[in-house]
Length: 349
Image 1 (cartoon, rainbow, N blue to C red):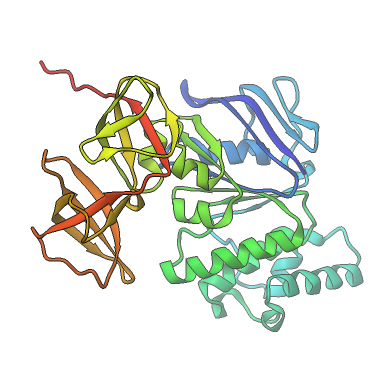
Image 2: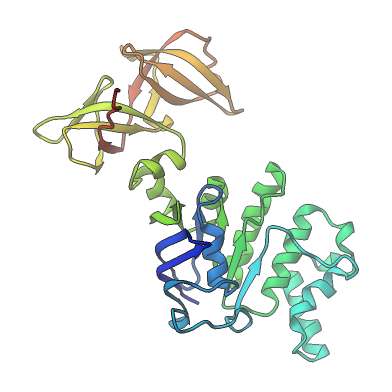
């Protein structure tokens, strides 16, 4: 099912929560709304599900109007499933019985077959007779997913479903859920504040802030071609370094001439986004920077490096290059994308 929001607006008690939200999730696509707490992403999900009514705009599912200013198709008639942050499994029911909750309209034989089929899809056939208290967090989440998939919805909405899991389990489950949704051919929209979840699961990601979509793009484009400063700062790590654009359109910073695809403003005075992978540690380079901070990440170390001007950049370096604090190290530029924003000037009072 193709999901479409067109100019959707929503307010609560006079406060605007969503403003002109427009996006499309293609049939069979896995997508995500990514943003900080209170940005409106869960409200967008609830409007899609039919739990809230929109104030303006329209919502379509499979080309059919689900909501506009004259129409509101009830949640139970939208054929859209939802997986909540809290698993909400009924503790007195077995795994199989929990999965069967949405299948009451089927006869007993068809219901049992669909439960078996769905449990097989999520890899929990052997746990069918266990109870929620006997399951791990990851297993509980897969039961919740199976329960949502069992009625064969045309689309699935996931509201921060991994937020209560530890980091190791979350990473493993993310890929499991992605594979399950792919196998089911499901259109899905995830809501999260965690970019790692978004990037691991989604084909397209919408970065949302203050109720407005800042950019709707692939994870690659969000990272390498951010539409504005908010996206640049919210997605990935990086710093902004002052630069100057010459008459030929080339941008130079104190690190030298930047090469690669030009993204963003064509102003002469710019701030250039430099990611940690744009700064390469190179002992043979005549250009040096001083280690002022280091964060060990196992296979890599994230160095914060101070340039001659006092400006700082980041560099992600294999961890066998274990340099001391305040040690000068050689660096060189390796930019494939030159992302530039108009120079931000601080007003002085």
